[in-house]
Amino acid sequence: ILTLSQDGTVILQCFNQIEKLIHQLQPLYSITNESLLINELARSPTPCLPYDNAKTTPLLHTITALESYTALIISLCKVGQVDLRTVCISKWSSKQGLSLINKLSELFNVIVWENALIGLLGPPYNCNNDRPDLERLLKAIGPNPQIKGKSSKKKKVPTATLR
Image 1 (cartoon, rainbow, N blue to C red):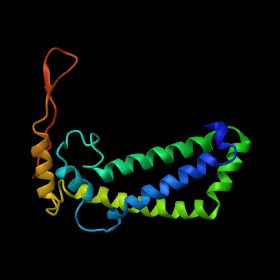
Image 2: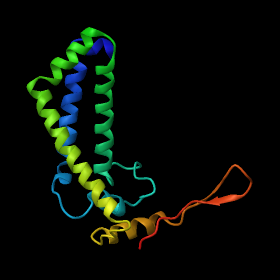
Image 3: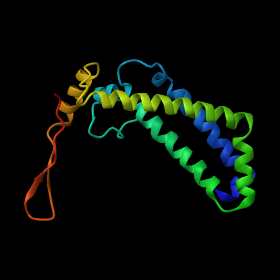
């Protein structure tokens, strides 16, 4: 990967993939008072294993793929080779790179919004907009399993509850 990165090919391919993934996340940009991620998990046939099927949790899979490409680019930029750092800086400062930075900052705002909505479900707010999805998700997941601690006694994992 480092050898291919010398001419910027890997970085440009990552940029292209990131742009496609951001486009796939467009449903998240329609800011509502409901969490689309909780809704997606709640409607999944396997909410305990959301990574099993990309067709049932497309937003979650797309966010995960986006994070992987972003981590790759960050890793390339951190390499100690001066010529590779120069390539990274030139690609990020290009028109495509700057556009991508703007899109990633918009996505950051959307993810912060999703996080805020998820946070509103718990005390002290107890927002009701996503409550049916959350109740469906908790019902599908079922009670928390018993796990063994360091001693031979079984410890109970705290259960998520709605108030």
